Image (cartoon, rainbow, N blue to C red):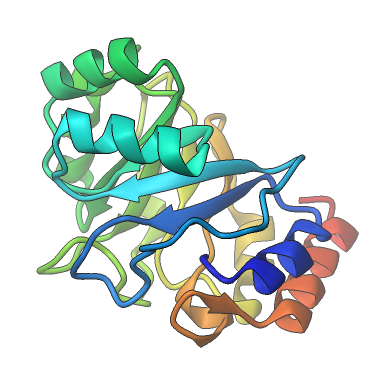
Length: 199
């Protein structure tokens, strides 16, 4: 997100994180500090293969609470980043088959959350879902967020999904009116349906 009024409206809903993308190739790229700063939600800065100095400077400038790494960042990179920025870290993994989960073991005890997204030729943003049954093979201790193609129609699927490390969901393109702008009523309805279903 990047529009202050839109961020304020979404902050009034029962959400925990708000993401800002700092990947220059993204159509959701954030170049200016919004005037609105959420008080309850954690502001998460999303990067793809950025260097640590750039990440640290951005986190400070935008007053972010956490970092989401969506590129090819190594465990050593994450370890150094944690010691440099001292904030919440989410590492994204592209999932197409059970073997893709194996790489997560290298990041155990380094990340606060993993994010499991649909495998694409680029770095996320496909708007497509992957087979969540694959995650039955995940035996790690790091809690994870589900991402990839989650929309208003996904409530029942989320309700039926179960895993001891399942911590939440990441929504984006299917709730947008245009890049980086969320349809507030659509998000509101989705959140309310999840509440009704005790998710």
